[in-house]
Image (tube, rainbow, N blue to C red; front, top):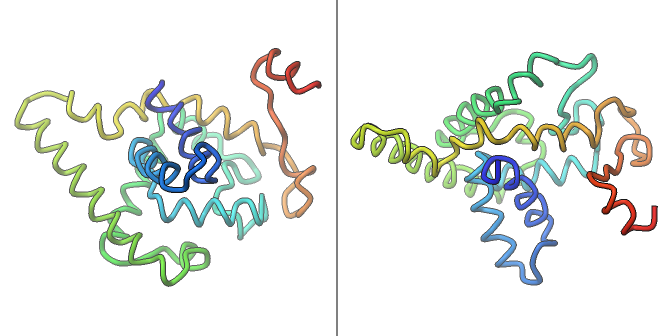
Length: 194
């Protein structure tokens, strides 16, 4: 769970540049966290920017976890990151071929697209290397360093992500209506004065 779920908060805060005082430290941890939880860094940076701009605006927010009506099957599959992992590799192959999805072309700037294609090729090479080492060693252990823990340890990420927006207003720009603050423990609520 430390690999598959805790990495999400590192990804998020470093992506916003709030974990460290210097940009380079945020970027280094952001890229490592992206690889660990199978997220392409450039795509997610721009996707997340759009998410904060157009939170739950249908057709604009690329990070709506569950559309209405809720896709319960996708939620269940993503307890073990199954749907997200299949989508990750599908998009990774597309990006490695030098293409974006139509939605991605609306939020990834032209100047950033070369980064998307380069990183996708690097990620594919690293995953292929891990598979080759697994076959050579006749062991699944090398895959433990390249995302496998996300499949069985990422369930907490889904819980945190769902609680922020699920069931709230769509197509409104007022963040008081489409987002909620979630306190995970009594001590965090009491320390903020609420």
